[in-house]
Image 1 (cartoon, rainbow, N blue to C red):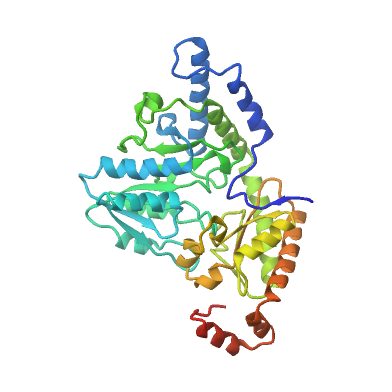
Image 2: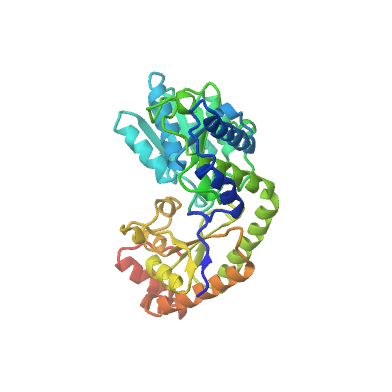
Length: 408
């Protein structure tokens, strides 16, 4: 059975060129970068070159790039490290209600240490309102952390405007750019970004390596102690093969960013238009205009996301749901709830994310399979039968009787 992978926001396959670049650093170039003999210096030079490449992707200086184990560590270090180092100036942090859990759980951990966090609401498209952001500023606000683009619904936030508003208030601005790095143009200087998190495995690089950009002058406490690696800021021997792979993946992504962005955008819009035209009771989640080029996220009424995922998986289609039920939780996505979806609609959500190898044939097969899957699941729904026969009042009454608000 053919497998169609449409979950590139989750992870991506490592490109052949990236593997080839990494292989020597597992064997003949295996030296520890902290060693002073030639074998170690060879590895040290390679890490320095990779740092320069990655800095260039976002318009940073090489000394402002620190290597980590991935986006989650980068977010933790940026937020906890800055908060703890600057607590004497204030203990208030601003973030949004739709951040990745790497940010939300980090902020919650700081609340247990006595920090205060404002979780900004978003509009129905998942956009942070700049006026809300400005209104949340307080004299003791020290840090704002707003994601560049949402990992579930693909909404791209007004980062430059938010960063400018933060700087007007004397507040440092961090962005989780894990989904945007290598997919959208980013210039930290032009956009006013003070700290930025990114991860290798979202851009066809290896898992287990990421970066944190820290603008010169921004003070952070160490998150990991134990050595003088990363100029004494992060202990632990560098993951040299991973770092080399990350840089190679970033270089390749940068080289074809514009054409690949446009190609994926066309596939994304093709998918959105087909679903809206051919599948009833379907709602696009997130902004259509301010959206990642590879992201398609829909909610479908009268179905459960888990059943949808399982049937699609049986057809060889790899996608994800807006519900966390497949991870052992019955809670729907916090992102979908934040944009105003009721629980029962949020449970019936689907995210498809396009990649470099995705073709229009793949997208069409996935949508044809989705139509069949939804038809099978909805056959078991008496509410959908009423909906089909135009008995809207009956549908509303049944939903209200069950305690659910109706949104269609």
